[in-house]
Structures are given as structure tokens and as C-alpha cells.
Length: 185
Image (cartoon, rainbow, N blue to C red; front, side, top):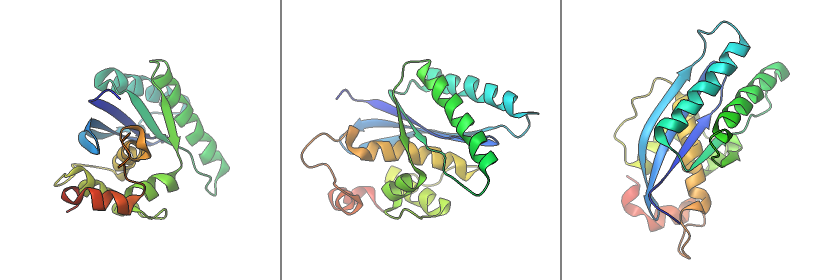
């Protein structure tokens, strides 16, 4: 495995798309590079939003040059139309990444929350708080929780073992905490 490497995480949305980039600097070691959102509410129609998502995600890829992208999968809510729009936003973001020949990994929201907090039904606030601890950040300068959701996708991908190839890689959250006591405050 070649290090350092970076992962772009994306939380797709049609009003706000959240993203975060982490840099993997060694075994079980990641650092926050950037955290942000793409605001789409101001655009007049769904198709314009999709065009903006495509262009801005390509720009993120060109700017931060991730080796891999982790994206949150759409979840089924009560409104089928909302889910279809969200799926389109995710598809356009994926197409933008694939146009740069970067591999994509998709994670269900529950799996991301479980990887970050140990609880699949954790709140956005709990995920953000745990990310601060994992990354050793004092505070995130964030306007929306969508940004930390995008970041959580990247950290979840890191925890899936892609970068920790040794026999002593953590098997679960408790194992990670025991092997990394200085990372949890």
C-alpha cells in the first residue's frame, strides 16, 4: 500500500452536498484535509443542480486528488420522489468521480454511523463529536452537518481495512480504541 493517500467522502444531496477529505499518513493514522458543503438551494431547477454537482465534484477531485472516493448510499425515506432525486444526485457525483478514473466505494448510512460511533442509529451530532475525537480536531468550522456526513463516509472507508493491512488491524470499534488510546480523548 502506497502512503500517503487521500480519501474524498461525499454525502450527496440535492439542496446541500457535504464532503470531506482525509489524508492517510500511516497505519491507523489519518488527518483532516478539508470539510465543506456545496450549496444547491439557490439553483432554479433539479437539472441545473445536477450539472453543478457534476462540475463541483470534478473540481474537488482535481483540487484534492483523492486516491479513492467513499459515498453515502441513498436511503429509502417516506417520499419516493425525494429518494429518486437523491439517487440522481449520487449518480451524477459518481459519474464526475468516474470521469477521473478514481475508484468509488458506497456505504449505507447505518454502516457509516456504526463505523464512526459504534451505533448504527447515532445522530448527526454524535457522528460529528466522534469525528472530532478520531481526527484529533478541537472544533470543526462547519455550517452544516452534511459536511461531517461526507467526512464520515471517508473515515468509514479508512476503517474498512483498506489502509491497515497488518495482522494487528482493529477488528471493531472497541479494538480500535484499545490499540489507539492516544487518538481518543
